[in-house]
Amino acid sequence: MTTLETLTTRWADLRQQQPNLRIRDAARQLGVSEAELLATGTGKTVVRLAGDFRELLKQVATLGHVMALTRNDALVHERKGTYENVSFNGHVGLVLGPDIDLRLFMSRWTFGFAVDENGRQSLQFFDAQGQAIHKIYLTEQSNRAAYDALVSQFRSDDQSDTLLIEPAPDRTVDQPDEAIDVAGFQAGWLAMQDTHEFFGLLRQYGVGRQQGLRLAPDGYAQLLTMEQVKQALTLASDRAVSIMVFVSNPGCIQIHTGPVQKLVQMGPWYNVLDPLFNLHLNETLIGQVWLTKKPTADGIVTSLELFDKDGQNVCLLFGERKPGKPELESWRAIVAEL
Image 1 (cartoon, helix red, strand yellow):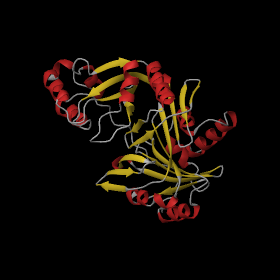
Image 2 (spheres, rainbow, N blue to C red):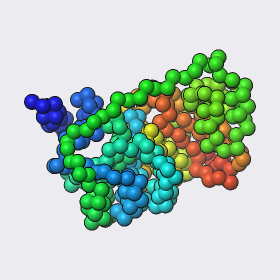
Image 3 (cartoon, helix red, strand yellow):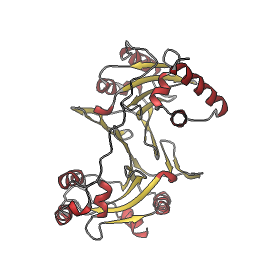
Image 4 (cartoon, rainbow, N blue to C red):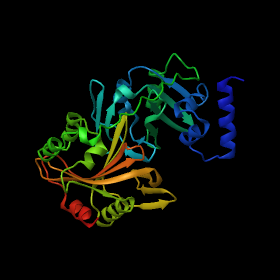
């Protein structure tokens, strides 16, 4: 038997044994990437896509009301709405609607598929390692004719059911703390006028993100626990405080801005289950949580930063804010209680 035939058979067996097993978890059990496993359905439930995915994303608005999904191992972020104000500057893209709010890093978008399984249609995108970047699911209100036209337009000439997957790049290793100009880094932190300057500050001093929080000026970063994250979400729900929830992977950042209401614990997963926004957080995969304070021209901005056990930043929580306006006092009050 070929490797593909073996994989297809093993997946079929696995689905019989565990009918509710999600494809990402099945791929991990089978020792392959999610994209490789999905590709075995090409010609049946899957169509491979090709072309400039930036042009495809510019046309997603024609689908109308959809559900956008971005995830990493620890969190799944699902937001319903329409894709509006889609723009690109080179390989960096923005979707700036009131519902769907994305930051796109297109150099990571390698594979695309249209998937029709169990009557549910979606567009799914993966990186060169076969890891999921972003998925767009049709809802009952979506325009299926527009979806069919989009799939036809971007259908690949290559409809083979195997993928050439690249090995993951080596992770960047932080410099030793003693090699860092800590005084310069801290001075730069205190001089920030915008939270976006933090990324440049880390690069300037050769500091890893988690390392940077350890080396922060006194009083500007402290370790919290997952229980305190859940406490913050509970208080935000109880007090109807509008928050911002960022979930990221190397190819996409997806943002929810608004209230959170229905909070549900299900085993290791802590969930927000609202009509337009769902968040699924696997507590067992969170390594560290930090409370950070960053100076801006509008005053201090406070956030909760979640890292996985590999030290990767996987989620950010803020009070709702816009440039030119100070942070919500109601959010600061929540953070003060932590």
